[in-house]
Amino acid sequence: MAVISQTDFQKGKARRKWMGRAFHGLCLLSVGIALTMLAVLLVYLLIQGTTRINWSFLTSFASRHPDQAGIKAAMFGSIYVVIIAGVVAFTLGVATALYLEEYAARSKFARLAKINIANLAGVPSIVYGILGLEIFVRSLYLGKSVLAGGFTLALLVLPIVIVAASEAIQAVPPSLREGAYALGATRWQVVWRMVIPQAMPGIMTGVILAVSRALGETAPLIAMGALTFVPFTPDSPFSRFTVLPIQIFNWTSRPQEGFQEAAAAGIIVLLVVLLVMNAGAVILRARFQNKWEG
Amino acid sequence: MLPERVIAIFLFLCSFLSILITIGIVAVLLFEAISFFGEVSFLEFITGTRWTPLFSSKQFGVLALVAGTTLTAVLAMAVALPLGLLSAIYLSEYAPRKVRSTVKPTLEILAGIPTVVYGYFALLFVTPLLRGISEDIAVFNALSAAVVMGVMILPMVSSLSEDAMRAVPRTLREGAYALGSTKMEVSIFVVVPAALSGIASAFILAVSRAIGETMIVTIAAGQNPRFTLNPFVPIETMTAYIVQVSQGDTPAGSIEFKTIFAVALLLFVITLAMNLLSQYVVGRFREEYD
Image (cartoon, rainbow over all chains, first blue to last red; front, side, top):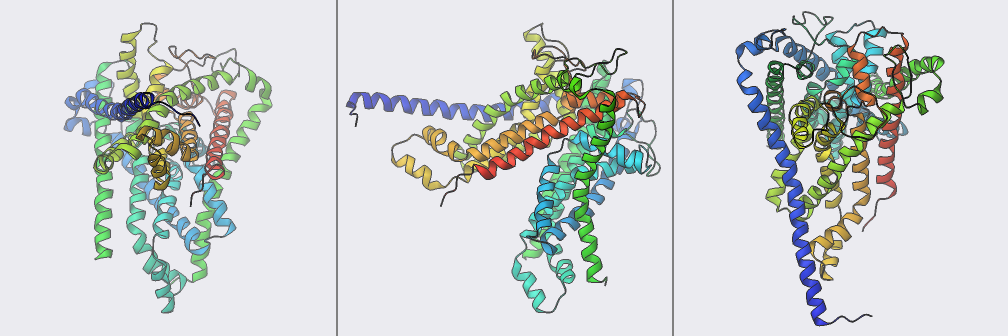
């Protein structure tokens, strides 16, 4: 075994201490850079867009004149599409999670379905756009409509809902189920009266996350064929539409500074809505939890 | 009350739909791609380096798009991997609990911002900044898009890596400390190796995410398919090409239209392979303790 002298040991110790401190600094710096980027992004957007936000920006249609352009059509489009996506993804997602966790748990089918869902979550969003174009727009003749857009986004966010709902259902204590079965409840009665209410906060959090994701998506709706210039609000599920992110994309791509300011203003509106929704998720979760734990 | 059986069948059909989605994606892409390869040789597609389906002299060398995708994904990872890993080490090993519980959700805000917002930021903030440093950088360039994309996927790398690091048992750290290790030595030589499968899988997922990312590169990286690794010139990625064709009025059924299915199929195969690899790495190389 090698023997090192006292002085060498002290020197080595000092060096290692110094390196340790430098490494700590480096780690802090990395987090600092990431947080700074977030701050710069938000401040830059506020500087660019705040002056442009006013009532007429929210209530005007798109325009060739940057100072008259507004987000009315895009906002209505976004709201309709996201509601459809949310309702469809909620229904399908919860039903799927219930089947995989309560009816077919540990079956071969459930295992296969779960691997499949994990992979679906990793499919690039633009591929869903192409799927939506071929299935909903062309094969089912829905056209490039609000309905087709909502369905496309529903498929895109379905894995998020399924995973959240599965976790929430798994977290329901088995004793509750067994208690109900002991009283002679049928499987569906157990699911409907015990499992779903208990799992609801987790499910709703997942749905809100899914809807936020749907609200921010641009690429799949472009691939599906949503419009970029819409001077009307959708008046039926079969109406053509645009959404806020596409409107922002369209304005960003234009050379005039006025449109870029409008894009920043649109982004601020989008981010505020996302923030409100996520805050809503947190509050909803807390409320539900109190109700059942109290 | 509905009969139990009907409910069970309804729930089964819903869960079967998730499998149908995968089948639908594969079928749709394959169907149109096969028709595309009836007109264009597969060899030309996969080995050619010039991509000009929208011009009159059409060439279908997808490597020009693959190069753009590779370039932006590699540069984005060059930003996201070191920053994400160091952030994860900080959060898992150094940060006091209070700091961690504020910093982690704040970082995750980055992952929740819509990609079109990052595209705006890349084109109108980062690009002018880069052009201030060097005039050789074009208005549309891979560098700006990739740096911003790196920031976007950073929280994915840091969150997943941190989860893996926190799952490393305390006893391993205690053992290393007892031998006189510094915190840095414990982090680098004990925690990171023990969490390597989780970190590697986070890394692969992040690459897959970078490859599939669309709006940042569409807005900031250009629409010029180019077989190059020069980050200062306009390029085009596979995803951006699909958007470009979707935005135009290319008639359905034309060869130009069919190209997006061939490109999307390639994109799907690449990302699927990476996602499967990521799952395999987590399962196969997990270090088991206790």
